[in-house]
Image (cartoon, rainbow, N blue to C red; front, side, top):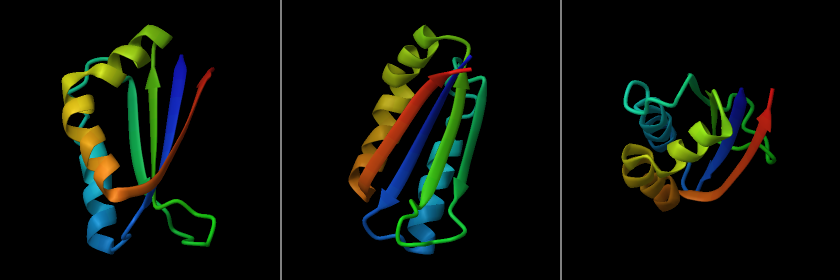
Length: 96
């Protein structure tokens, strides 16, 4: 199993913008066949070091993660929105 975690820091983290990002991430459910698990949450602490939204996904294999990266919905709908509203995006991928 491969776990893929992404943290998003928005340029303008209004409650509406943060909710839009979370909702867009969650909209991948049922649209990307390779996804075995999908969570997206909004930061509660809002400290100086906090990111605004977290994405946690799981895949059966590294090949499935790579297919997700280029999936038309992820690459064509989700990624462009994230790039347009975020000042920073960080990720980690690990095998478990």
